[in-house]
Image 1 (cartoon, rainbow, N blue to C red):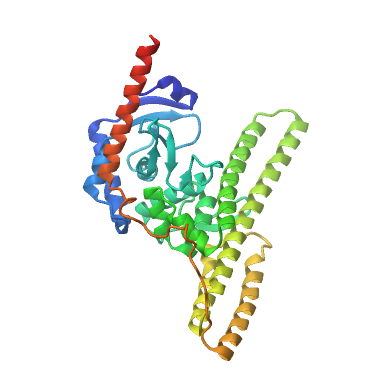
Image 2: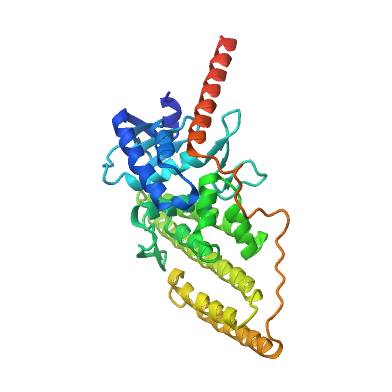
Length: 379
């Protein structure tokens, strides 16, 4: 049942509920696209359709510019009221993926959402998860190869998601350049640490944590920027206008600087890790080719020379490797996997979508029973 008072507080104003036929139509489209696009993850269309068709869906007005929102407490998806069925696919896939990945405790509180670890001492991973889900949504609609050239905050880059989390999606895509997309999508679907641990093996624990925090901070800075721009549009005082414009430029510069620093952290940590694994001349050639092709994923800016300088430095390191290989032959490489890192999926973790649907109905039933019990006790 919709709690309209709580929704209004959250900036959601319900217009009407979608009919069963409309929900089934969306569930059929989404389950087909997700299963066909991510078939390697063991999804079954009939099970996914059953799970998605049980979601309550509404058209609503939002106080922000969102196209859709998922309410994990009641497993409800809200769509912007003026969105058409032709435009609904990407936001619908995004929010349906949130439904699939959400894990709640017995009290109904969200415990984990894909890569977003909520009950940790320091919650992080929220934006990595948002970017992962958005990349999956755009891949399901457009395929892996389509990307658009965009420019934000004096940053130029290619992204599959030009309108939703473009910078964040591009940075997470850079991470998958070194890990592959399979671990990312698996962790997004099954709320595990496969991607996190795979990236840690390609870099280190501190790097993953720093990137995760940087992505969360990037979104907060952009939110602050939008607030400041809105504030500026209402000002009449000349001095306040000048100050507001200065704040806007400062926020843009912070976003640009943090984006490039995060990119550099990804490139350097993963490249040095790969460099240390080089054993023979074939590895040398593959490393050089891989680093060169990273240009496709590079975020650039005017007078930004980091990548070129880093590439030259890595070529010098490669020359040293070649000399060692020519002198001593195949090099010995030690790359022990820490015992506490899980890099493989297990059947116990990999729930099917029918079980997810059943679990969510049980969660909702138990929460409603508890609410009714509490109401009777208080009356």
